[in-house]
Length: 536
Image (cartoon, rainbow, N blue to C red):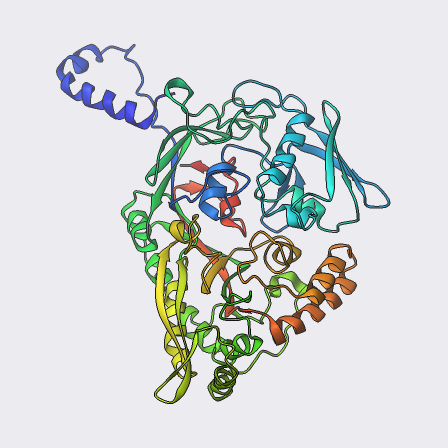
């Protein structure tokens, strides 16, 4: 199979030899022209980390999703489907999960897939500190509350210390792509012919070329166990911002883009020969304050002041034209049906916010972030925001809105790949920040990875013992009404002392050129499946 670059070189050579080619090609036996290679070009933000166990955002997940498979697949509607596991059985006590594995599957290097690869993959999630271990079951020291073993070549068995109603969603999580147990390294670049040897998956596409911050090219895996993809290849093209990505799509340089911010949707809808896709999701921005000792939100009154200072309904109207669902103070949205509690929010009350800030100043508990200016108490602090969707615009509205409540913030909108990278000023370390949280198939994942002590993504450093106990009980509760009651109790805790403001839950918008067929947008767009996608 020729690459796009090789085809271009051949065409240039053909033009130089045009008279001879015309003469030779006159006969009835003239060679047929080779059909154009079918390569789908996808626009994405730049990658942050390419380790499958750690890459949390859509670009990283899509990059790895093309090369690797899951044991269990989560479909766009949130249901589970067999993948490398053909079937599974759960013991009556809920403590043993037995997975029957697909036979005849090989990795890119030709080695066979089996149960030892499952063991290696899930033990590596623990050793690498992947956030998903919290959903599957984790002790305070980071160790797992479960083990995994190979019963035979095609049977993997997980043993749990206690029942976990969401364990299967952990097994199927976006981090849990199955790796070869023979891997000496995972997604690390080598030299020469071995440049991409450690990118060794069982997936439908194979990494062929990677230019950091520019692009990644994949060719179809003709030996894929699910059947060779309809496409010849996929090219991921990386961008710093959404406008440049839209411009490239409009020009025809891209075939598919995801996570289009609301302010660009009107322009997107005017692109000729394009189809706009929209899916309701639990995707949301989280505005949060740190709560650990010495932080801005250590005093609960500061957290309450931010809530009273925020007009969620106005933000939804101004930023999304009302297309979102105004959120509560917790991450569980209406897409979760009966588990969602449409509670009353803190009303927008700047006067009450100012009173709380003044009380914090009087008590001297503002940790240097609550100061007196011209005889009034105010909060002064930098505000860091990852530049995702329209969240930079949300931050500008908040900056203006909060001033009425004597909250003054210095706005820092940071490129997504920088905001989520390692460093002192990244999303996990800032005192006041806004973070993009994508859809999850189960709401329990938010609680386990972000809102309990020791959780991998507990960006607010919030430690509420009652919430932790309720979350633990919910993890063992499969009955829907009983779990909903537990979530209702947690909503009250978030309302009174939680460190987060969630303005709205938003739909995810994407678009593809009309020549593209078969795309089904996933609620977490990075998990979109391209095996059945074709170009006409």
